[in-house]
Length: 375
Ligand code: FNR
Image (cartoon, rainbow, N blue to C red):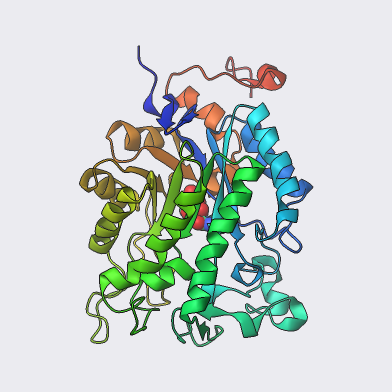
């Protein structure tokens, strides 16, 4: 009998993933000057040990001012490569594929790690390692009244930032990563260009759909040019801003229809998979949270964009739902965030709920649930 789809391998370019479970990128706010640490080795390493097919390291700044917080991971200098390489090697030794999310936080940069917010406030000022003067965006529009107002990127700044993504891709390759995911979601810089909520430019990077997608398309071209042909390239999008229509912005914001049109361009540029998240552009967003609430977007993109794979993410917390989404051909990979923080064994134990034997790491084999007497 055939394996449940969750455990079927997937080949993308030269990479074969052993199953469809992906550790969704999650900021750990545990870096200093962008460096990965032993925390990352153990944290990311545990998922490689515990059966996840692809572990994706958190949003990593392609420039210091592109970090969300002063404690975020970075990949803007060659010195960052060595520790990342150690993490990559550990993943590979344990037969997991490993990716890294390349990011620039744009107008949502220079903020504070969640657990420091009560003490330091939500914005990181210079005294707390922040860079208020270097917060940038497509336009001088703040996310909300409490956020930094970004400085508008000039054309030469745009070109430099795009080159920073390409340089980061070269470092990711040197570190040995199998996959790059570009962070085009959650109200960070790439998404800020896409959405009319944050992009008020009147030059070739703002206004029409073609202009708003230009920043991302040019990054994809540059990154794809540096990133080896046999290695997959993913893009995470906020497929919709979930903002109701207004007089100022009749579409509300960035929309599902635009994401589908953008995805058609992305596949032409050599993007292999769009990871379908949502929101992050505006405090006016209204998100209908429910299990698998973003799955329909992954399904729409997969269906309407031939040749492109899609990833589903968001409140997918159990084995049955994960497998169903795949069996119903709504997505190719299941990205799991918080459920993996709670249950790092998810990829090993989901098999029990799908009547499938999943090999434990030899060292852990005696911990497998074998009878009602094992807990
Ligand atoms: C996140 N998320 C996230 N997304 C992203 O694209 N890059 C990132 O670095 C982060 N960082 C991050 C940190 C933490 C602690 C959480 C909980 C979430 C979003 C995450 O990848 C995922 O899309 C959401 O959490 C929804 O999926 P789950 O958690 O419901 O499976």
